[in-house]
Amino acid sequence: MTLPPKEHIHPDYIGMMLNHYQWLCMKPRMIGHVSDLLMCIRARVFSELDPKRPGKRKMNMYSSGKSGHETIQSLLASDRGRFEKEYLVEYKGMTGSVDVYDKRLNIPIEFKTPRSSGLIREAYDYNVIQIKTYMSMLGASCGIIIYQLIANKDKDEETDYQGFWIHMTTKEHLEHLELMLARLENLETAIAVEEPAIADAVYDNPKLKWLCNGCPYLEPCQQMR
Ligand code: SF4
Image (tube, rainbow, N blue to C red; front, side, top):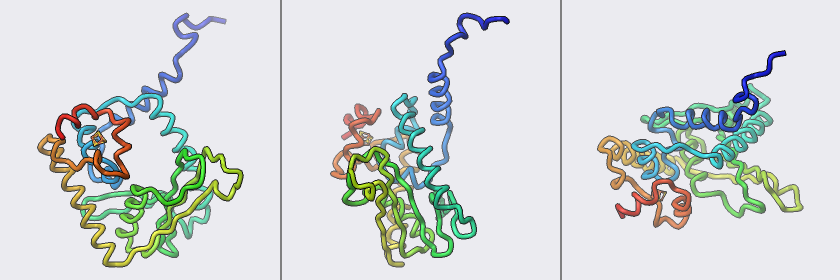
């Protein structure tokens, strides 16, 4: 039997995974997905103008979140006549895909897998904005965010999955879509003129300023405040 060349005996499999993940992340992306509009618009502008290679921590969150996410989607959407996974929605250049869409009742369902170790008291703001956007696009009066706590330490297994219903009126649909289109315009303009400073930022938003802690663009962002 011929042995492989010495440099191939211990291939760097994790490095190979990371290379592929970085390639996925660095691929040019269309602007206008709902996920572009939920967090910090300025960070999204920076990432378009000056993309940074993600590291292993981000890959860890991506792979663990994605596998759990796809599994719970499949558990609910086994009735294909009623449910549709990754249901595509579009409104005036804004696009998105609903995790699972209950076609019979016109209810969008979003799954999240936070690392929270206990009870979630209220749905996270950016998750609410996302489901409201899908509800508005679908004309749905209610939608639900279901959290699966993958690191739950609570003894009560009932808290492993927590659902939060969201309700909206038709008037609220229209107002919400206007708000999201204004965010999209802000994002597109800042990218077009290559000026992150004019993009909405979250550093003074009490619910989202935690994003600045791990932001790779913190330094240039601070210089433009
Ligand atoms: S530092 Fe904060 S406000 Fe600035 S781009 Fe990053 S996340 Fe946005």
